[in-house]
Amino acid sequence: MASAKLFAAGAGFYFLIMAGSAVAFTAGPIASILRPSLRASSSRSSSPVLGLSMEARDAVTGAKFEEKDEAKNPAKRPGHVVGDSEAAAPVSPEIEAQRKRIEEHQSACVKPSWPEEIRTIMAQKNGFATLSTMSKAHEGFPMGSIVGFAADGKGRPFFVFSSLSSHTQNLVANPKASLCVTEPKFKGAADARVTLIGSVTRVEGGDEAELRKSYMENHPGAYWAEFKDFQFYRMNEITDVSFVGGFARAGAVTVDEYMSGEPDPLQAFADPVMNHMNADHTDALKDYVTHLVGVDGDIDTCQMKRLDKYGFDVRVAMGSDAGIIRIPFPEPVSERKAIKEAIVALSKEVAKKKASKEAECKAPPLLLGFLLEVAHQPDANDMGASVSLVRLGWEYRGKHARALPGGPVQSVQYE
Image (cartoon, rainbow, N blue to C red; front, side, top):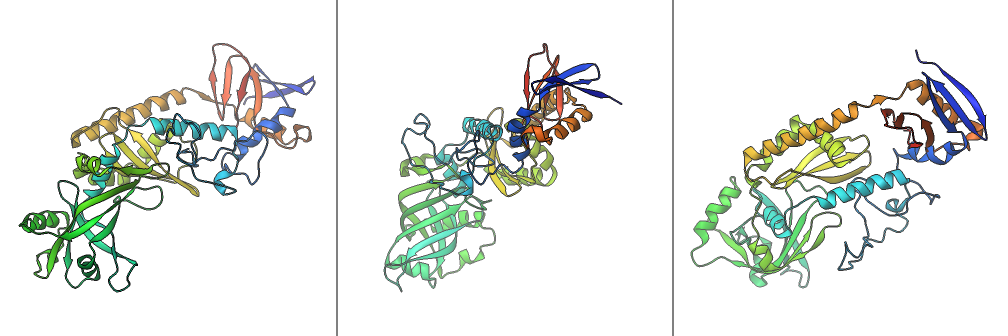
């Protein structure tokens, strides 16, 4: 069993002789450095603390609630006013640095263009959305209805409505309407939704048969589409397209941009792939988030929620925090076989990173226990936040140590 001896060196310095190696440290700085490490699991503080970051970011994705960098926000769009909310609570420099790294990684990920993403949402199978029409019974007030829809080749949504429905009668009296559509796995504010504004009118001119066939393909159980008192309606004129893709992803595209976009080529078989990954490979998804993106901490759940030619999005939950993390593919893919190859490539990259990490040897438990004991000594300024160590040939990080080519002073974060 390893043994250790403590020697006082004056001026608050100590030397720990352990297994033939000397580790020098001071008791005083422990209080000023160890605290952020011990706080890392909560990452929240109720009041400003010296040395802690005050920049408001999402706890999981690192996304800023207000982007002050004009290079990243040339339009100078105003951000959210977080005020004294939990999002404004200061965090340690270590947590702030991690969130910044994650945000930079996520910003660099290639994603479908907004027209492509919106057209993909509109092309979903068995789609239902909120149609808002101008109430005929209550003039001046809108009425919302949950309706089934499909989209034609130009992205125009169409419906099959009973002549008895209130929304049908509203449209006959006033065709102005809006349609709010969410992505298939929508759960909350971090997920995507699109709103189309335009005029919804009855389809005429012999297109009914083609639309009925398309609608039945999108809604296999919609037998009422063949009822004689049901007619087809379509948003033949689209005047506005607005989009919210999640936090820090809100805006609009022109109608021409929307109509010229194409649904993602992987949409037809995305669901089976995602269902398989979520059912059988959640550990792999957690590894991607941890080792490829750099999210640090205990991940409670990790579910793939969107798949496209450039990569996939996963919904990550960590305690009371949750967010959407993007995992990019090494190369764009356009067919089902290539999806498996891309995911295998991600797993190989994770294996390399794990092997590199496992090459580090764990720091001796006796040393860890000793440092934690010293951190609680009266002369350690109550509690510490990190430990400044000197050891020839070794560097300690967290609970791991690795060999160094030389012996410089290392600043080490213990958790």
